[in-house]
Image 1: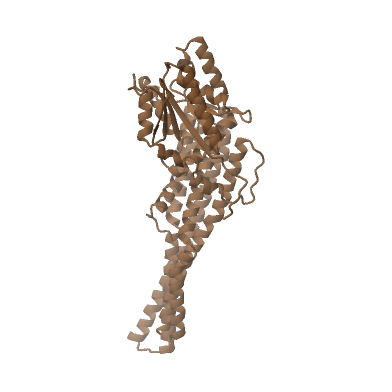
Image 2: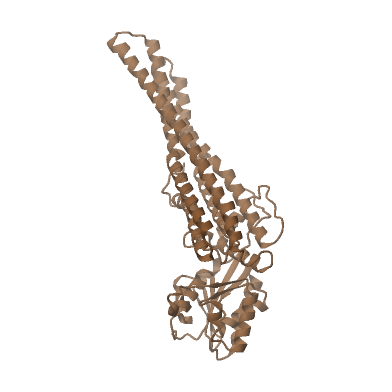
Length: 498
């Protein structure tokens, strides 16, 4: 594997923030926040970005500090923008609006039906979207649900590194400090970045171009790995059958030495091949790469839809958490840079998504369902034909030798070898039918074909973003669930690897 690639997804450090609205010393608080962010940006070799609300007080200080230091900011609000700003005075409102105008993304979190819980839900969501939490906290219990103490407690419980600045004294306190030591290095993202480019070129340095080129690189690597796994997995099966056949021949010959030696060699080869060919590692490598490829494809499919990508999160595939953070940041940067509109017109999104994503997948599943059916038919035909002819030879030999009294030792041996050969061919065909998973794949392809056809029709009929995104999310989950399950089975050793 090449250790040099021009196409790399940038590593990121997402810093969340929580703090009080009323600050006894705003100047000191601003300096604590600004100094910490400046230090992190200078010391961290990846893209640092902030995630916070823009509530008056500490949140606004953090957001403004990000802007002053050139740190991208993603704003999360517990209420829609106008409702959130309604209680602000004119000066604070102007500051908050300026910050939101310069932010790379703005998202409203929480459930509208539970307004009293919205601040807590916003804080929890912010913690789950970040790798490090900074808090400006006086150490006292919260005055209401969703206060600074609640968010610090949640982050601490979740194992996030937390840096707390005392809002009165400025003293620093660390929670889960050891957890912060691994923030700069993500082994899965490093592995994916180091995959060879495979002829893929990077057309430019725009965020969307980086994401698309990175996807093409992953797809090229995954496509190259996949066919080898199945072909190589068939070799030990064929060698085992050949070893049994040659050993059987040896028992019927006057000089069995050579045949026994060949049979033993084939048996040893069958046993050693999985390790020699590294089938287990190849299958795991393909699963890792293909999973990342399909998740990236899913992100790009929803690239011009509003909001961040949330179809599959780190709770499902924790090893891809940093990849998802990086892609979401690139999407936010792309949408806020003028390269693409913040939100595509819904009609344009529907046309592109149905045409480029759903229709292509419908055609893919239709084609592969037919191919799987043909493959299964071929394997079954060989298996049944081989077994049928072998049984006919065996019965014929028995009838002629036992009932008719016809004894021809030479012909008998040849017929026995032929029957043994055909039985082995039948066994190999049956094994390959199982290894290639033809029947299940055929049923799964047809099921997805039918579901996608229905969802495409539903998607075209919708006219507002919420139901469109709901159906699109349903489609993406359906397309991703199988490969994620396969990856999980391989990772937890619940599926044979060779």
